[in-house]
Every structure is written in structure tokens, then in C-alpha cells.
Image (cartoon, rainbow, N blue to C red; front, side):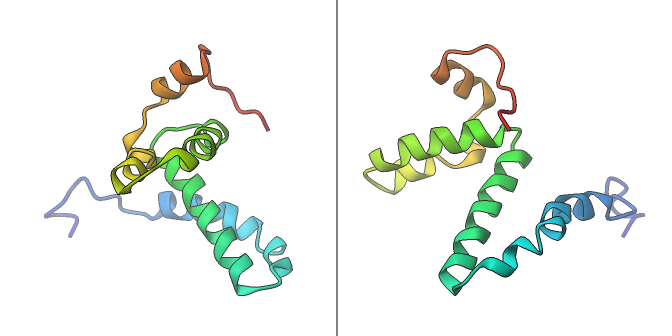
Length: 104
């Protein structure tokens, strides 16, 4: 495979680093009392990691998402809210700030 695709990484460090927050938070998940709670946690973690992979600061993306989500009237409106459809500079412009810093 590496001869055919030299751009392929030879190790899986990237994948291991991406799942590290889940491993660290594993004990917290013991407190998901129901399957619905576990699914909700998984959905939020997925949204946050997707935002990070798309270069967005999770706090500002989630804030934007939760403000705009109730206004979505159709599937196209929902698609516009996906992390890969939003750029960091759009969030800066929307909130009228120059730098999006981590709040936590």
C-alpha cells in the first residue's frame, strides 16, 4: 500500500490522538443512565470532533449551531449548518470578533 500511495501515513498516531478524549472520558460515560443519554453523548462528541477536524473552534461552532438550528426550515438549511460548510471567518464575522479563542 505504501508503494502505491506514498502519502498514506505509516503509523496511526492521528487516529489514536483523535480518540484520546473518548478514552479519557470513559469513566464519565458510566453515568449515562439510558441508551438515549448515551446516544446523545455520542452525537455531541461526534459534532465536536467534526468541527475540530474542519478547523472550527468547538465552543463558537456549537453556539452558532444552537442559535441557527431552530431557524432551519428544510434539509438545505440543515446542510448549511454542517461543520464542513462553515468557515472560521464566517463565525468571526457573525459574532463581530477578530479572534475566536477557547472559552473553556
